[in-house]
Length: 586
Image (cartoon, rainbow, N blue to C red; front, side):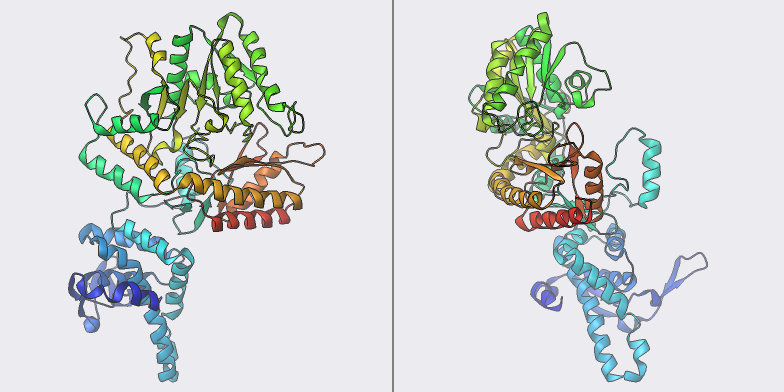
């Protein structure tokens, strides 16, 4: 820590704002009134002229050492201090190193005093264990991570963190139908890259979150959103560059002919609009989806989402085809032409719809809700041909598999060589800022009467558009699609090695950084093991790794980390999963 202090702080310190500071504002030097309010400060013997920020650094180090939540508590102290005396960017970026330097100095001076005054060891060492503990916590979290946290705290905390148990009670009362992951829900307050943090500073490796596609808190996206919010945040009925640049940017990534863009707020809204356009353009009213698909939560898209149907629920205007499951389905990967045989089920679905006709088939190219099936390119090609033979449109739902996640292209339908009639995107599009879009062939819009406005108040607002533009730029500039391919291949190889050692793993599938690990009771019967999947995800959560589950039986581990996922993080996931599997019954 002292070496780091020399490298980062020593040369800069003389240039910082300076004033007279107390330099020893510990709990021993504060007087409290009967109602525990600060009534006085004593011991000005250490008062000196130094950098202003050192006053705060000394107080954090001396007041919080020995606390289990020292790092998180420091953020609250910083927020309070900067609400009165704001710090500039350079002071904020050095604060964590100044705190660590103070703690390291206390430990070092204590060791020196013990040698010099062995008869007075109790006084000399009074604060040393707490200082060592605080320094250990900074090291465990990572000095760079703590630096970023303290820097963010200098900008102000939006609210005070509450004890997780109390917060859970409040949430259940106020949001009774709002689902949570895990038996012991994870209380998150911050994210950075592929990491998420709870109020105590414990970090979790995010191997599930599709929203923060370029990593949590990516500075380029944060800066774009904050700056645009400061300049202008309004609807899209006025001229503004951002929505035009976004529309041009999206069409530039898609096959020719997909040239009409609508910017909306969510994937559900985009799919809802796509469904309206498909019915108007074809004159048909029937929809086709895979048997456990998910395409949204509006009334129209719920009807197209069998994953969400209640028992016995199936809208008359929707027909389903089996997901192309080559592991346990009717047609298996070892059979020639198995994927195309699944695609042929479109004809059966069209017959079921009868006079309604096929308006569209919605396809998630990775079949994510079905268990991350990722069928070969021939499947989509055959599906597209059969849907069009029945007069319908093919709608590629890229909300989960798009934005470079497949590792080969920005959009997951590309390897099949097809050209969808409509492409829908959302979820990760703004890296956490709500934004979605659909891109269609412009000639389809002629069927929608001109007097019907395809407009959304918040859709295409400048803040959402600059967020989406920043995400596209980061994916390209940082080579995140290629990173998804490389790290995803490394991760898949490791998962296949775990499969060889653990019969609980029946199948490993997927591409890029969208991978599924199917858990089974035994390799012969391939009977799903949903309870085991739940046990595994709960155990992984306890080890600081966040995973999800998917598939009709809920027995497929869903691995879908941010695209900034690194090889060493993949290795951490593999090592912990191996330990958890070894400690379980499979």
